[in-house]
Each structure stands twice: as C-alpha cells, then as structure tokens.
Length: 220
Image (cartoon, rainbow, N blue to C red; front, top):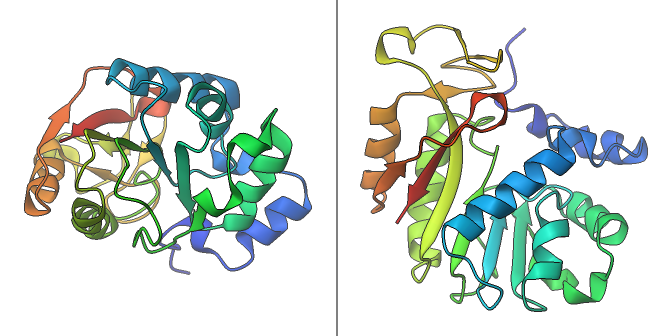
C-alpha cells in the first residue's frame, strides 16, 4: 500500500483528531517547548510587538497562544489545512481570544495565501515542510514571494540529509528517520537553496539545534 504524501492529508484526519480532543497532539507534540522555541526564533530574527506575523501551518496555535498576547491586537495571522483546528486552538488556548479576529484564521491547504494582507512583516513555517515533499515547498515559496512582498524574513524548518545519504532513509541526530519520498521528508542543503532561489528567495541556514533534528532556514 503506498504511503500518503502527508499524514495530514488522509481523509478524516482532522475530524477524528478533534472529536477525540487531540488538538494539541496532532501538531507534533512538545507543545510548550516547541511554542517557546518558535517565539524565540522570531524575536531573535527581529520581530517586535508592532509587527504583523503570518503563522503558516499554524495548527491549533501552538505558536499563536504565545504570539497573540505578545503582538499588538490583530497582528497575528494564520493559515492551515484545517480552519476547524485553528478555531479549536483559538477557543481553548488563548486567554483572550478577542485579540485574534476569527477572519485572521485562513484555511489554506494549497499555500495560496488567500486573504493574507500585504502588511505581513514576518512569517514562519515550523514543522510544515518536514511532512511534505520538496515540490510542495517549491510551489509554496513561489506563491509566498508574490503574496508576502513586504516580509522581512520567512523562517522555515526542514530535515536535511548528506548528499551521499539523501536517496535513502536517514536517521537524524534526534533519532527521527526521514526519507526522500515519504514523510517525514528530508532534502539536501543544496536542494533547499536551489528551491528558494528559483522562487526569488535567498536561503540562509542556521546552526540552531531544533527538536527532532529539524534545521532552521531564514529566507529573505
């Protein structure tokens, strides 16, 4: 039986998880730790409370529950394949949901960024393209370049493998086994740079160590 392109694209995945009250679990675990890391990465990149943030693949607002209180009201925007998941996070994880208008939560499985304003200063896609093939990253970056023309930095994470190991399963430093053709996916540094460049971005790698062996890239 072929593996799904992404576990998140399996029919009924979100409905089943939400029915079981697993809105935190399905975004990858390590809720508090990962949310803090995401927030610190953005602050280190220069984000201030007056800036506008786009959280790509926001899930149940693991980052949002920290960013929304810190940013000025209405300055957080989010996209995800499931709007229901984001709304569950807004209802259960925000101390003051009024700081986040519901229309800032945009269902967007195709990375088309419908309704995302041109005022976005920072964007982040954490643990999103680790579960999607390189072709999805290529398409997303091309569209983002058009829709996020004023962004100061787009942060994203991927799994990397050495060029001589990239065509087979590869065990990351944190123990996760990644693959070239099924989730979780890995790529090479050269592939990330080339993919970003083709879409009009310059990709800068970081030495920051992230959960599960993910690597951080800053696109400008």
